[in-house]
Structures are given as structure tokens and as C-alpha cells.
Length: 141
Image (tube, rainbow, N blue to C red; front, side):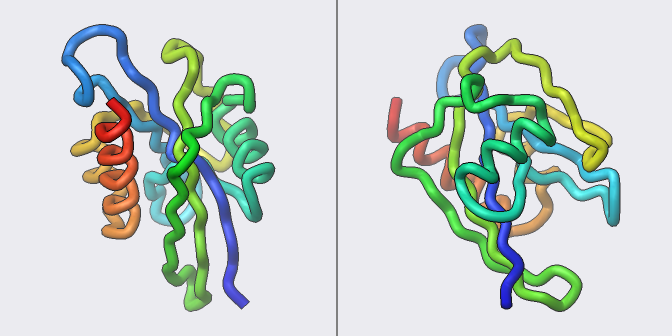
């Protein structure tokens, strides 16, 4: 049986320059375990879990986020020889100044533009998901 996780690709729009869509930044968290990889916040099961895990891992509550209707990506990969699937919704941080509060599962965070997010994410499936989220946001402009 596959492991399952769910989370949010959290983004914020900066009011200052540069103009859209370059004013979009994505939140990536660096794990405090394993190879200290960078990932969006995620948890075990469904949208409720994604909200809980985002609150637990980054300090953002459901009230802090606007979930974008029409965007859901499913990733499949292996973790320690076991299949894993992860569902990601896209959510905008309502107040771009809201502070990130990390859990003990992560040691650092960064707000970064798409190119830097893809560099940090390293895994092609995550990079493709970030690019798909960005294309989705560009189409909404």
C-alpha cells in the first residue's frame, strides 16, 4: 500500500515591484531530518490534513489561506523503497506579511520566486508541480 500525504503549495503576492507574475513567491520548508530537502508543507491524508499540517509546520491557519479552486496536483514517487503519493492544493497567503512559524520538523524556510523554488526543490516532479501552479496563476491574471 502506498504512503499518502497532502499539502499546500503556499504562495504570496508582493505588492511592490516587480509586476505580476514576477511578484509571486512560494513557501518552501527545509526538513530537519534526512537530507534536509526543501518541500511545501504536507501531511498524511486529505484537505483537512493539509490545513492542519500547514498550521503545524508553517503556522498558517485556514483563515490565513485562500485555497485556489481548480488546482490539484498528484505526485507519485518512492520513499525508502515504498510508493508514496502526495496531493497538493494551491493556496494564497491572504496577508503577505504573516510570519512563518516552523515546527520541529523543519529547520528553515524561504519565500522564493519560481526559478529559485525549482532550484531548491531539486526533484523534477516537484519542479513540474511548481511550474504548473505558476502557469495556473498566470492564467488567472
